Image 1 (cartoon, helix red, strand yellow):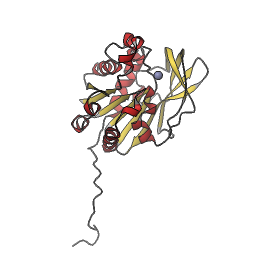
Image 2 (tube, rainbow, N blue to C red):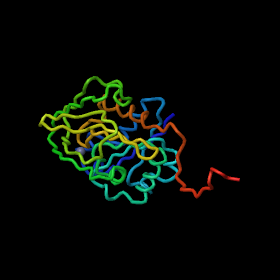
Image 3 (cartoon, rainbow, N blue to C red):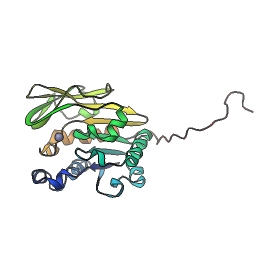
Image 4 (cartoon, rainbow, N blue to C red):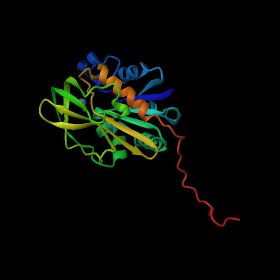
Length: 240
Ligand code: ZN
């Protein structure tokens, strides 16, 4: 059983009627429901507005994989919580960063680069191509799938060269974007997945939900938690 915490900024949902129409209970709820369709995943939610943003030591210690959606309130996430999440990723917790989470403090901290991109909100068609058909995150997806109305994200994307490029997107306006990519940080696996925007029903789409579940399984730690204690040690060779 993989224990997942779905983190949602949960600001647009309370400030915009248009967003509330699409996600009346919040995007985090819809994402958690998509994950809980898999009986081997147990997903709960946490939001910015909760004490410690819902990400206390106690919660993170019981989280195998964390998903992160943020957009307009990245700067309201406390540095202390970012430090805590960062440490947990290095220990082995998986992290799935979604859509506008590319500019979150935690993603920028883990990547060490600008994480910048270009964008346009014009309801364009997005065609998401599978780059690695054998990758666990791409299972159940055909050569490509399409999102009828999406916000465009375009290159250059200010990320370090990914360890694996799972998806690449083409947009009707002509741009392309590295929309699914993986990295390892310490003992933890990190996956960035582009689709998802507060005004489009993208997290209800079957292919997107399948990829999210695949990503959880891929990012689930398979080795014991790795706690860095920087020990001072005795010599091994020639010891009495
Ligand atoms: Zn967006």
